[in-house]
Length: 201
Image 1 (cartoon, rainbow, N blue to C red):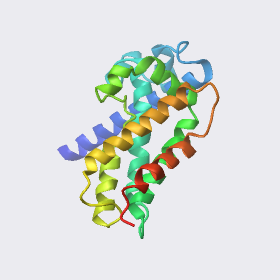
Image 2: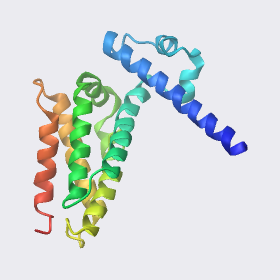
Image 3: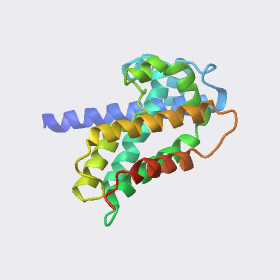
């Protein structure tokens, strides 16, 4: 009974966070980040103003959640789908491709995160504001090593860190570019470039 109550409480907390997140994103898209207030977000979500701070300490935290949420959602999909030859590397490419497609929809907001929410010292300290793919990449690289797709003598965490650094570099460049281009093509091309030298064939 206690576990069931705890489970319901966790679901309710998750649902409130998602309502706040969706309301904030909708307002950021329609009227801009700076013009949006916490009061507007909570009203749009149908929650009391103080509720916002139980889930997000600042408006910036909503932007940071965007990256973590998408990587978590898409990462679970990537891990649970696809079998066969090249399956793990295929999952890694599909993860980055789906992530790029998702982020391309909100280029202005992602750019804002890297302009005001995440600094170069943050990135150097390993705080990518929820945008790091390193844990998921490390898992998929280990799977690829077990299936013989990648040299098993290579350090999977070091490979994941290198991939994460390249991904973040491309993400920042894409955000800073005055001309929009396909992030999806850049990221999948980057994976091919990095993995070409570490595959077993």
